[in-house]
Image (cartoon, rainbow, N blue to C red; front, side, top):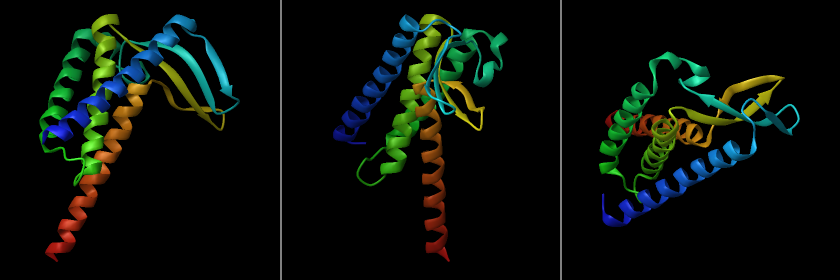
Length: 164
């Protein structure tokens, strides 16, 4: 990774983490825990929930130190993979790792300072919550993982086609 790509990655991570943390602070300071505010009827709701576990509150008995370890390990793996970042020739790969690092850091900050993660976004389709309640860092993590998987699949398909 050259210096230019490192600067792009770090700047993007900082912006994404700030976006996540500012959104959480706005919710913490303006929405009562458990409160739901309908933004678009039967589609989008803003709320305020504390998550001591993972998705849908799973493993909430594990405690914050377990999740701090998981986030640190995940960020370390993503950072190791980031050695190959190149925003010119490997755009999907580079952006996906940047998103996953930012998402991991955003939720790690919550775990370190609050012992839990603040969630606030709810999508509703056909009167059902689509993904439960989540936050901006979760969006970065999930979209980053999807892009990463797509990039790996595309790369493997092109390698396979070249070899056949």
